[in-house]
Length: 640
Image 1 (tube, one colour):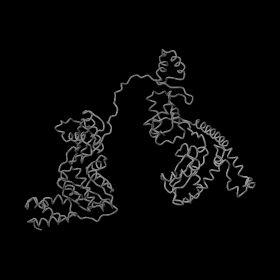
Image 2: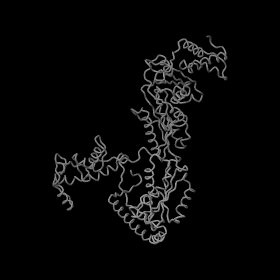
Image 3: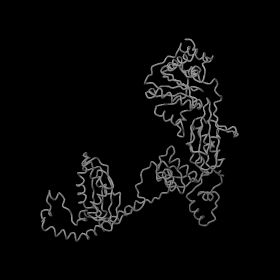
Image 4: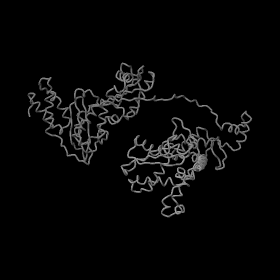
């Protein structure tokens, strides 16, 4: 094959190179001098660089690497190389040795050549995933690279193209590993093609930070430079007011956090850099403090909601602090008493139960021979260790206090401190059992007369029943406990208004008040579950039977049935027809009208008795609930 002599022959050679690129590594970089001859702005001139590239191409064609058929059971390993003008990737699989499967290379566009080295590496991976999508979907992919792209891609503060690349790569099963040793000669040639001859020693990362604060806001700029031309830029905007000095310190702390996230902060040396030598970080800081973060394009963007140090730290000077043991120890060792006569008498009374042993104060106990007395600091350590230490079980306050006593410790406020410690334990509050003790007294609703206060609620959706009914609207009178219910297909304002007008207003008059979220619907739900069994769709057919049964059942609160409190007499239930009762056998339809009228005249007396029984029941219930009452009041920020 002779060297091309015109543009036509260069075009034919470029077509051949493109068709053979998948079999030869890094062809985009090696053929760049030849491909550049195809640009229209340049005249054809076959240079020594083009001839060298052409001879190298022929030499590689004479001994190309042997590609293998991919095994679907093995992982697909990806090696990435990026230069100033091109990006290349190699796909291999490991069996006894590394076998190449596919090579991909591409010349960078003009704008892409200005990408940072880290962005070029990610671009190479994205380009490979687009070209070989079927390989990425059918295999577990392992990317072996020494660039920290995994810690940058998964950061939530990315912006611009890095965000779209991160989202695009998230659909594949990709794992990142260090490059490690190269086992195949073809892979060694591929890696060595773009590896710098000498890496900077020692392995040092340089962090440039700068802070800025003005009337428009405050922010910080961070630049992290590492070996292999790796550059990570971060723009940080503060959501709180800062001074210039505070912005500088926040910038340094944010930079150290970024280095720690990347796993490169083993040893840190801090040096001051003049502003004229820290121009880029200063520009990022000014840009973050004067613009919204959405105006920044491709660097990592982040907003700091609060300062890194939320409270002032003061140096505490250790002094001989007095505590509950001071007066007792002084009396036992020196015989001195407080100047207050009452306190002196109290000390003389208490000191008989204490003894000093080897410089430590002990209390004589009933459950154990001696209990060691602790200061507040020692008590806090003991509580923390017993409650959440190696042998801690996050027990309750009473159990915690008992374990402290059994361990041989004592202080006067032991029980109260245990209760307070458990209340402030976040794990106990999050995963503890629910408290069923009522937090406040019972608040009952007083009903002055029948059908004056109604409660309404909506149940469902249920399985589709007769007429495609899925919902149930329920209304309950608070005095007689009379229930009205109707099955509805949909819950709309018009349907609820029709139900209320037909079942409440036209039959019992306009109520004084209407309350939502009724508890009586539990009775209907419980009875529906018992009656239906597996026939879930037949619930509308059973609804009238359930309502009739509920209306004819005496209630413990009123000692009467709902039917009697509503109509003045008890209804005849079906069993009295199947097995005739006394009033059924002696029933006279002609003579029944007059007794019914008399019962209606006397219904007010029956309702008054029911009201008295109801209030007595409420009083008993309130008294019983008061015995279990544990008042609790919560403020904003409390754990509940």
